[in-house]
Length: 192
Picture 1 (cartoon, rainbow, N blue to C red):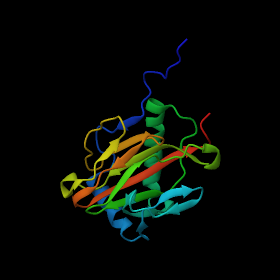
Picture 2 (cartoon, rainbow, N blue to C red):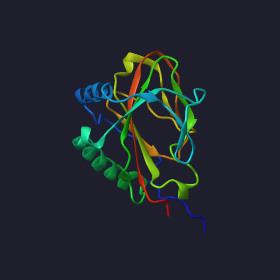
Picture 3 (cartoon, one colour):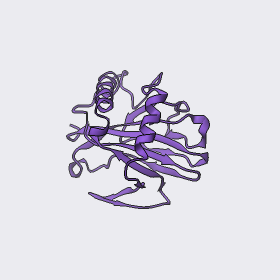
Picture 4 (cartoon, rainbow, N blue to C red):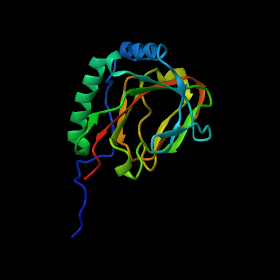
């Protein structure tokens, strides 16, 4: 007997329309400029982060839950629906602050996944990741979100890609302008 996943399951979902209006995208960009900013780091070990400019070069800020409560609630409702219809993961919830990522010229994030393989050491386990492009793609060149062995459409302002956090993905180097995105993770207790 061969056991396979149901045909309805997916590992990457691209929204067919924007989930954020251009106005909300701009509000989030403006909000990020008022928050503490730091260089993007990578996970080195549990609870440890390190700066490695050969793997990731970007600037990030985190949006506190109280700064955009309604947006967090709307996103959570959307993710619950997308999870039920496409992924079928148990116990998926918003449990980390949203990150605004800014990629300037020559910034990038090389191949990585958003969750480790030893899930017993990292509760809550990230199960789904989401990237929303906040600025108009005409404002930059390069900066493509790519997945290993999967093609996706070029992102448009306000559109989202939701994907299994264990998928290898990257953001190619920005060659001109600035790319801004909102990144979120959803999860909970380890996979069963």
